[in-house]
Length: 159
Image (tube, rainbow, N blue to C red):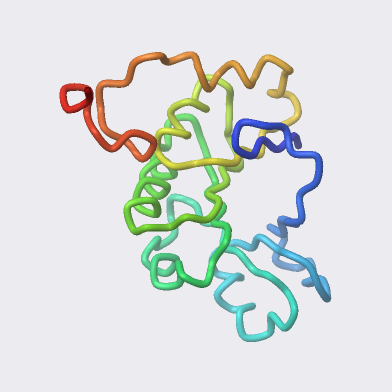
């Protein structure tokens, strides 16, 4: 899957995503794990760098308690109609998280600008949805009235 980080196509990604509970952890490297497995694996991490992968059903408070130890949080967008991932990203940014927030799952071009405004800065895009024009999606919305993580002031408070 193509990965965009900070609106640029990433050539190399050190993170390996393991969603299969039966798949063994590697001996070293950086691994993105579903929240339940992430919590269980922290005790045996050793030289592994671990990051949680949350979905709308998970308790974001578990992640918030560990923000100072994380460099990446993955958020699974399960369906077009599920906006909980947007809210999770916003909550993480409001809590002061400066690391990477990566969108995985149902990520599409028409929502990239909105995901960015909520705090996402990395997008794991399904191969069948990726095109070379996808970078244009970030500038499609030229005026935003509401405050967000990328502009904390609503339009009537801006100069």
